[in-house]
Image: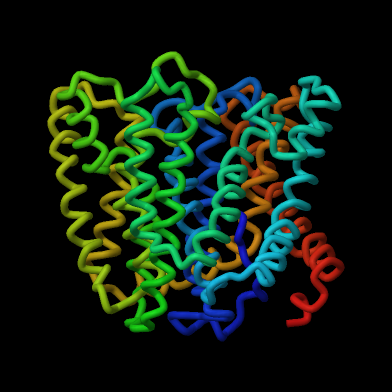
Length: 436
């Protein structure tokens, strides 16, 4: 999430299917941008009555996409960007600049949004807790002031690990397998080994390493002409992934057959169990979606996407069955079913109008991607602020207006953080990098 690149405003040069600078595919930035927006949408729904203290949507409008899946996408995107930006094996002399660049990129926005959260929240935090959060100790030893930052802590560990991976030329595929085995074994030995966070961190590392693997695949440089409507179809797939991920369905059935829960019983601290055994079922889908956006024609990922969509559509049988029986959970399945149908139309039916619409949407997403880190970090304190405003609340209209205000403020503050404040900080601490 935190690797969002600063790019210039959208221009006619973006008419090319693949726009690159510093070897970065900006279609990836579009995916990151929309994923950040989907996280905000998700939190508007799951943090009940937070945007509007007097109203929460019901029925099909109470559906929100899987923000957690989007965070897993961020992990893969993070590994991809780090890999594509640091192709040469790292040495102790170059690792210092790498660490400095990561700190300059991440910390200012993190600290400013942390302070904003302290200012707007109704909770009281001690100086010890504030300073501890500023040092990324939340979750480990202290309560989290901005709980959204949990993924940032995970990524910091992976950034540090990358120095060892790169300098020792460790194969990320082998390391991903080892990390997966560690995650599973740590779960199996619980409660004899009472560190559930090892499983969570290990699974997170698997996703991050998938991004590193994709960066190596993209070095083969065998791009085919990208289809914008296919990318649009992937975005629709993200919106319905929870209900139509057959891998998740199969994993749940396997766990049930083994007469286990797949979870750490008695552990309630989210930070320690943020990424679970069941989340690994999202790996194939998230990996493939990002591979399609990266656009390496050598492996024909578009074909695999079509196969995966056909497999995912098997769950439509479940939807049809329960719809006829009258016991379908409309909140959970109406909107996702529509999104899946849109995804299949975009991927399977070639249409110039769809291609044009897809192109416009992806180009808008590229700009969103350039401020996505700010969007991710700042939306929570803004939601807290809206929750403290009790007037103009309690109806569908007030909720809709508040959501519009939320997104407007999120985009505005994210722009200030990413396009105004962050570049000045970078110019001060990394003047040569800024000029370059």
